[in-house]
Length: 168
Image (cartoon, rainbow, N blue to C red):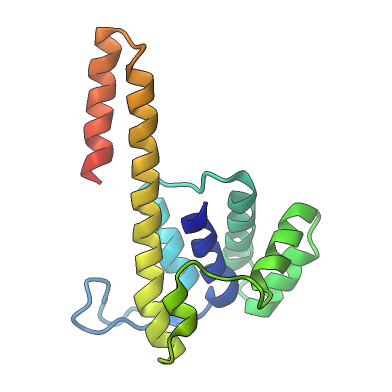
């Protein structure tokens, strides 16, 4: 859940901020600029990943709905709309996450004295990779537990799926 919370926190706090990667970065695209929200969503969707925690997933999807369908809204406008929305659990979550009391697990982010744009370029991709890694570990554990009671044919299928998970 922490990696999912971190991704959502970045989106709620800095979703519309641009990520300006250095030219030697693997993420650098000449002539293209991406936002924090676009970077996170493209990376997760590109891997076919969805947030596992249903509340965080609802908040993530609600944010992306405003991001994609309401370009007139700035970051504060998106947050206000989410907090005023009909899903009160999401509203409470958003209120908690955007308030200063939320402590990001990436402690160095809060402690860093570098420019915000430099911090985002460093920590947003790292948070995406951390989430992908944690999800792959979770899937691996689930497959191992399921294989114990499976038939030999089912085990072969699961072994192929296991190999796909560990390759990513």
